[in-house]
Length: 374
Image (cartoon, rainbow, N blue to C red; front, side, top):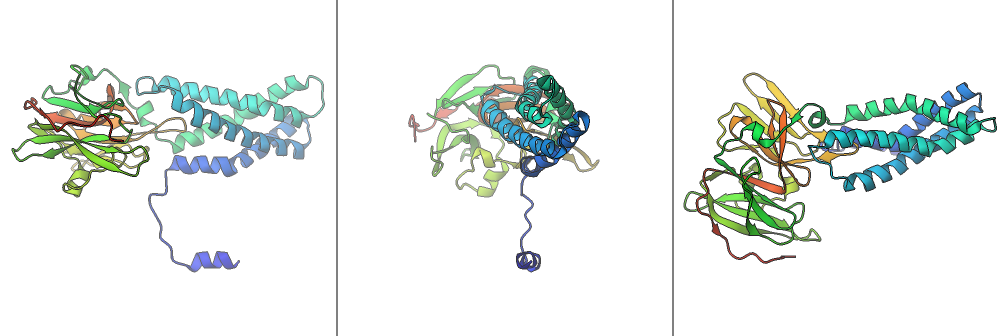
């Protein structure tokens, strides 16, 4: 009892950033939930097939731990990172993962059910039937628990359209990085792509950002990180590249100091040419995504994606005319969202986007950038 008493009487800090509902749901499921599910499935098997209760419960608890841990390794750690999921094929792959996970659960648990049923005529046929019955009960419950703990609005609440259908203003110019180190320029529909600079190897955390110049315009920079993540540096890309551009909140706080990486570029969304009553914010966790609030009416919205199979951070966002928002979704999707119309478009595959307003002011290349700073 002494450790318990000490924990109760010793002051401690309570942190509000201790993860998301999905993180805790997954941890509970892997550590304790499988025992509860196995107990229920074992009791159902014993009642339906008149098998030994203790043996059925013990074997089904082991079966659920085996299927949960093996399925996590197979689908979450190995398969999911290899599948080319993006906002355009998200629905197809999500439901494919659900079906595949159910099939894998049946295959892994079938031998345990066969052992739990003991010796009997047509034992494997009975085991197949028992496996289907117990999982038809437990899998929907488990799916529902994970669904409630997930962020699914980008899966269920938006329509995926072409970027041109959102009719973004032609006054905007988009700049972004590609994984091969190119700095690309296009309009907000992805048309007119051109490479304007070359940085060398790009880490998934690298991004572009802007600084005001002495002439009243803006210069374009990139912040990069070394392979072992122990060093980062700022690279000049274009001088005097735009008449106007949005300086993100974190750069305003830094006041010219070293820029934050893309992974940290969340918070209030800067407006560029947008005269709007809506204020928008990017959250730290995937489930927080992009949210908006209209103060005078109290209206709100939120769009995010955090599921067991796919979790996409929202980063590097800019609030544009017509209450459109351009941002990076996940590692390499540059998306344009109409939050009020609930429509989203994939503009380009890249990272660290910056939006400039107005015709480029004949940008000058910055000092020569080494092919690889790593």
